[in-house]
Length: 165
Image (cartoon, rainbow, N blue to C red):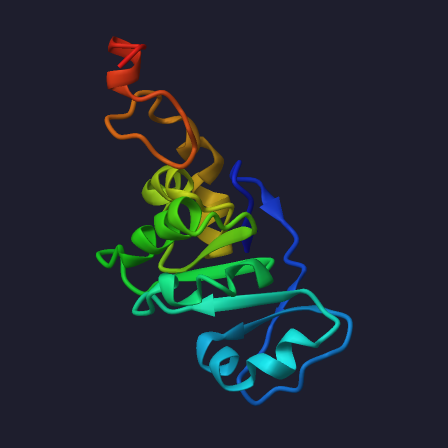
């Protein structure tokens, strides 16, 4: 199941291709980093919208010159205690100025949704049964005061205490 940044169910317009699957002409497709590195010239010329599935071991800075080519970048959370995709999201949004959709995939948990959105994620691939049973949309409103600045530009404690600082 796919959730948008408000926690509502959304349709997934993307087809996530296997590395050996042919590239369709007119569908929005995502490819692995491995496939992008191997076939980037052919994929650049494809007529469809292109997305990239980036493992959390990859450095997004290496994509600097190419990041604008992707309408979607899916970042992986393989385990609940592996937060490298948070750092990737912040790098993509702040340093690389990525404007496309950032999607959290893998072990996406309800109590991390708000922090994922603050790091720059737009959508979340989640276990559908759990998302429906636990009302994941409420996770975005559980906190309203934050100690750190973030990609979502919400006021943080120091800006609230000292507005001119």
